[in-house]
Each structure stands twice: as C-alpha cells, then as structure tokens.
Image (cartoon, rainbow, N blue to C red):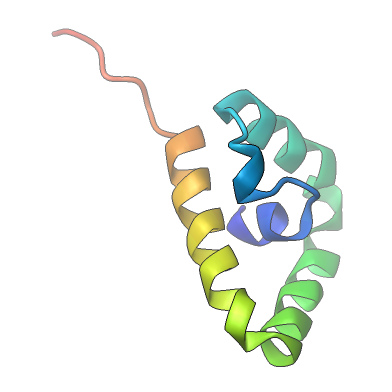
Length: 72
C-alpha cells in the first residue's frame, strides 16, 4: 500500500488524515502494478527524494491502517 500512496497526489506537507490516505489508496488500488513501476523509476531517477517519500509513505500507511486499541 505504501507504493500506492507514494504514487498518489497526497503530499507529506498536506498532513493528510487517515481517511484521506485510505481513500487515496482505495482509488488507486487497481493500478498497483503501474505504481510499482513508478516507484522503481523514481528511485532510479531521484534517489535523493525517493527515500524520504517512501519513509513517509510507509509510516503514513502504518498509521492509517492501525487497528484501534479497545479496552478488554
């Protein structure tokens, strides 16, 4: 899912909500293979910005899909 977020229009500077992240991923889920190719291309063409964006994508997806903590 981080690859999909990496390829969408959301930016870290936008401070997207979990709902916005999930909606963006849902909208592009069918284009996963295209996103993987785009991520690879960006890593090769722009390694100086790729790493920071992928770290952001990974941590943002983790937060957006975190299971809620419930009282036992």
